[in-house]
Image (tube, rainbow, N blue to C red; front, side, top):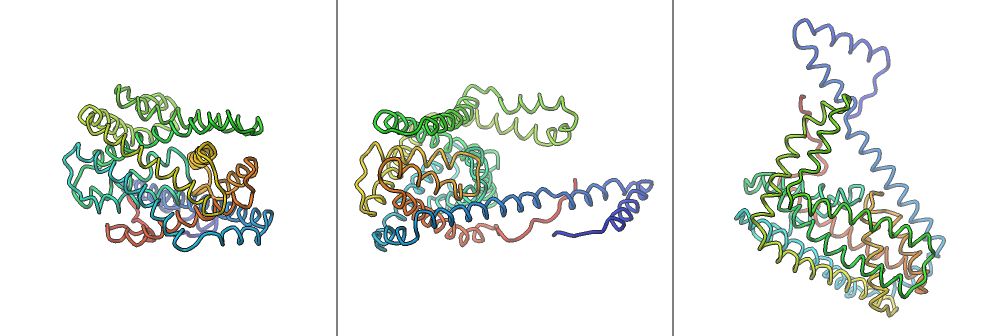
Length: 381
């Protein structure tokens, strides 16, 4: 709840609260009062609204540049049955991702049921999608929500649900990376792209690879990488209070994740195989959509489109990479000689499929005890 208070009223309120310090109540009340005024949710909402609006404006500009008529003609090649087939492939990829997550939960003998695991996975996917995208959000955001739902539904400890989800996600990203690098290598070998584009793709690929390796290797060797970083940051007094609140939890999560890898070696190989199938489904979906649009695209081009798409979604940009995803596809399809209209039609159809999956998750969320539109109650410090 946003409250605007004039300066003199604000000063009066603060003074009145501070006067109660003698009674031992003022300090606690001031903290709660100050927290409500400076709640980070306000900043996040503004950032979300601004970035989403800019992304939508960017998409509209692209539509007018490419030509609405050309785009509509291109989208007209796709039948309703074709769209259903593409949506089915997206859900099939999600299903294999859910199988990998369910397989990881077997380490803790957690019997949730594949139907519920798939629904929970869809909710986690949607949470990542509507938040500002990025590989860190992909590793942490959705998995934290899934762990909360599992705790509420089955009583599984949060750190265990989070560790299982994170381990499955790391395996998934590692498999994506193999095909991303393969796509970039084939693209560099067979297609001409401006040097600046290659440098940008290389930097993005190195960044995504480094983050994935940290999340993969750190728990295996029990390095406690993030705990060490936080302990180092405690040298800065301004960060002390915040860091000490989360340090113990981060250390416990890293410890639990290491134990997961120790106990779940045999499960990881199955997750690797399931992630391979998921990746193959996503690559085939790209080829099929372009085929529906009347363009025959070879394996190398399809893999390059997959690589660029994954790298764009992995970078911390607008929610769902709004605008930047469309721009990347328009530029890439144009450079590959397939046409900017094909690129924009392709990206808009993929966007529609993703948003449909997000919409389905909104109907599932209340069933699992959550509500996107209900503001959580204030907690005292």
